[in-house]
Amino acid sequence: MKRYTFIYKLALVCLTAISATSCDDFLTLYPQDRVVEENFWEDRNDLDGVRYGAYRQLATTLQKLVVWGDIRSDAYSQNPIYDSSQGSYDLYKKIVSAQLDSTMSVYDWGEVYTTINYCNKVLSHGELVLERDAQFTRTEWEQMKAEMTAMRALNYFYLLRAFKNIPYSNEVINSDADTHPFTATKQMDVLDIIIKDVRSVAGKGRNRYTQINDTRGLITNTAIYALLAEMYLWRSALREGRGFSEDSVRMDADSVVFFGQRSLDALALQNQQITEGSIDRSRNLTDDFGSGLTNAPLIKNDGMENSYNAQQPVSIPSYSAIFSSGNSDESIFELQFARDERSNGIVNSLWGHDNSTHFASSEAAMKAAFNNETNFNKDTRMWYSCMKKTSDSKNEDLPEGYVLKWGKCNFGFASGKFQASFSIEQYNNWIFYRQTDVMLMMAEAEAVRGNFVACRNIVDAIHKRASLDQKTGFSANSDNTKEKCIDLVMKERLFEFVGEGKRWFDLVRYAERIGGGHNADPFEPELKDGADGVAKMIDNFLGKGAYSRMIPVLKNRIKNRYGLYCPVYEMELRANKYLFPQNPVWNREKGLVINTEE
Image 1 (cartoon, helix red, strand yellow):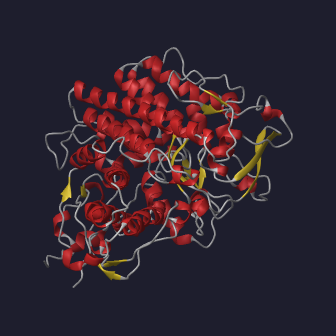
Image 2 (image 1 turned 30 degrees about the horizontal axis):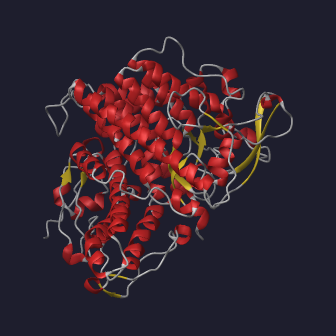
């Protein structure tokens, strides 16, 4: 009997050599059967085939990554108008109301482990290819090694943020014969491992490629540094909520600032080299808006003053460059769907541009965070996040608005309401990291370090860029405590990253940093169960959006830190007895037969 474990899905008995010199088509290329494994790894082309396959596989997992990392958050409400996709609509309705179930296939993590297996294959065979291919240099291998190490870590980072404790292995799986049960490794242990792995290759990747879509679409040093900054930010939160020493929490925050700045420096160097090289790219006007950071220029929204009073629609330069055109000066790592033959369906199915989309943005949550209707109206991000389209005859049926940032949009403000016209984009790149993400990681770390002015300056800079007059910040003089500054960062991240797959993970990190609780952690009894952080997160953020009437229900259903994470897919548990016990908050299996066959 074949196992259904995550390992079963990793099996790749045979691979084919694929020659590719650009990532123009790397999402379209993937290994296929040709020769037996031991005879496959002859030259760099073989490594590149599997390497590009890892990116393509990452693209196939995108929908799940976004569902795990975003849709439970305060940023959205379900669209009350739906079409024939009733099954998905009902699934999402259960998820956002905290009725997660291990029978939901969206929690099948197998495809993510397949991406990890691609990375493991490249990393385990690189030295062999180096010996066999005289044209393949040690420098090229070290750069590829850094790239694949970071890719593997990124996928494990998604898993540990989504599921908490997860199976961890860097073994290569070629067939069912190679499979064996893997125990679940503690979240903190996996995080320590991948931080150490990525630290070992930091600065050893490629700085850039000849083509802009390769520079932005493959993992370079700037993306490696950004990943390190975010992993350290998470570890600082987990350590703080578990009562680690203040020194250890601060050291992690120091690392966030250090690697965040390294990422900004590497991005600035990329942009300088691209400008000075042979690639023909137009440059946008930029300003640092007083962030206090080095190498942190933001694309200006020039000529936007008082546009909200205009009768004619207007475009917004920063959003057009970042989302519509793609590969902007602020891009750190984005999958190149625009260069692939396949559409990026997720931006239209989850948030989309018509009545069949599953989610609307939560205007209520945005306005609650602003505490000021006028400033809400003058923030151009709200045009992209909360606006109703003018061509929709059922416009008024929607209590909220569409997330339009992934389309080509023009905006106006008439009769006291925002209005938008747009064209649907089917091939948007998907952005994993961009400059403002790194900047706000650094702002949160500065709050932890007690540098409140530095935190506020970063938040205000990003907020000013989005404001119509580009002069209005967001912080107040009273925002001079760690708690208030972290709340400030959380609100700014809500505005900045709607529809980008990040918000639920932000809320989980917020709750984990607070920790606390009256009961012991069910699996780590030396710790509290984190219930205080869950309750505060719901009160301060989740309960301010479309689900404000559900606050008592959400607190009862989520309960403690385990409720922040996803259940393990039941088929994994049936196949792998070593994964037991199930996430205790979602442990609803009855009469489950455990497969003990070895």
